[in-house]
Picture (tube, rainbow, N blue to C red):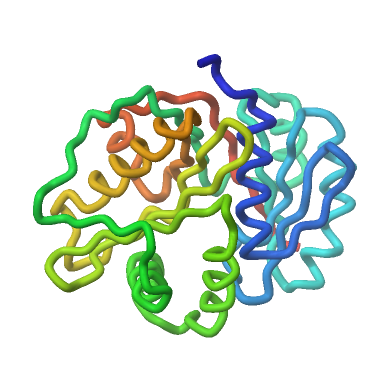
Length: 248
């Protein structure tokens, strides 16, 4: 299969996170993601879909981000060098790097016998493991519970749960758009890390994508330190984008 277009990959991300936060579009140039529940800048940022009109997008979104009492944050493709230079001149500084990777399948990993994978997890188990993996506490349970309830009603979504014994050890979400299977929320409960949990989840996701004739892809944040892990398992880099921010 030919590589999917960058725009198709970016729209898969936009539609996925629209289940978690509010999305306001500015034509075809990009969109603004905001959330009252999730306060980190990942959920409160401008997402540029091309290299033109960045200044107009930033001006359009700034007041909305200020109203949410968050910093001004923007993701811009690394290939948009002039736009990134202009943002730096305006006081924006790189905060993180998001790398988009495509599975070359089959993944160089194997599901381990002690890790079982379920495609129909109990929502409370999935939520508990997700929050434990990403936040270390259950404080966001009231906010995540209705989101997961909606996701489980969508044919485009498959939530995976990895169990070790009778304990939920990790989670993963698959979100489908035409020809694509985006992987999100890959998390392992701290006590079960380094036991092959994530590898088993990814292997199952790859099998689902292959059976459906879809490209499997995901994003890796530099701050998570996962890029090497994915490269070693057969993913390859398609492109990257900078997350830049400044105080309002």
